[in-house]
Length: 398
Image (cartoon, rainbow, N blue to C red; front, top):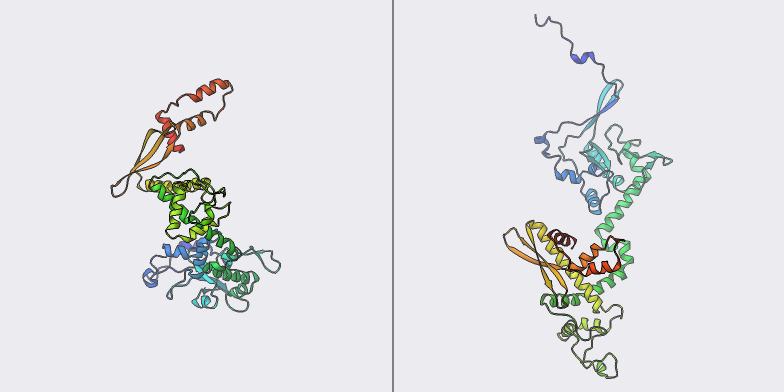
């Protein structure tokens, strides 16, 4: 009786078939068979060119995508597209030999299609065709997901391989890899070789000077002397003993900074001696102004290190107190106290804040036309009222 029953129509029979000429099908990947159990892993993402389409890339990323793009394994189940031919549906597969024949062809898992790695990274314009009016899409900005008519003289891959914009992109990628792997061959470095030599020479000249400044600061030794400008006098040189020479001084002590440089020369630093004797008047690097600039640079480096430590360890407190200097100027010393991950306690001095200057500068930022000059001068001469709120403001401002 069961065999005599009429077959019930399916629900799908009441809906017309779709009239799509072709469609792309990507087979379901078997994790065990393909051994690609983490196809959306960071490795695939980093090397999948489809994730970088239309983005501004650095040189390191470009080099990685050119030399090590994501490649399917040998047992990878390649996708296919379905096409109707003479009323029948036929499958056209993407195959491994496509990648062997065209090395520039790469497959993108994220975009489910193929791209040209050269045109994607080094295309200079988005127009192509015989009159350069057609917008470039497949293999360049959009994935190629239709796999019929790929090979042959009129195949899509061969046509792309013969395009002028594709050949230009290959040349640009080749030049890019040469300069990236050999920075000394870059045009700007070749043209600036003399400048680079001068920069290196100046750095070598600055090195002993900076080391001397760091030594004096670490030992809390003052810099200045009675004579702190001009050429350093080496009294072992007979030419420097001419009493009629305006640069000669009976006072041989030129201050700790300059005397320490002379001590380095006496210890055998001949290069430093040559630099000090043959310096350009505008590039001595030992003048008081340069000393201040180098001290400021050292301060910024130390402060940056301290703030990085505080940010890393998160827990900190602020210690401040009134400190009057030798010129009787009232100022506030600022110290940061923090605990590292090993429960070690550190207290780092970060600087002084002149409360008068900071307070008056902010009080006069907004002029008040109702106050006379006398009242303003009297107001500025008074001791600033440092409330807790204003002290925190000073610290943040610092």
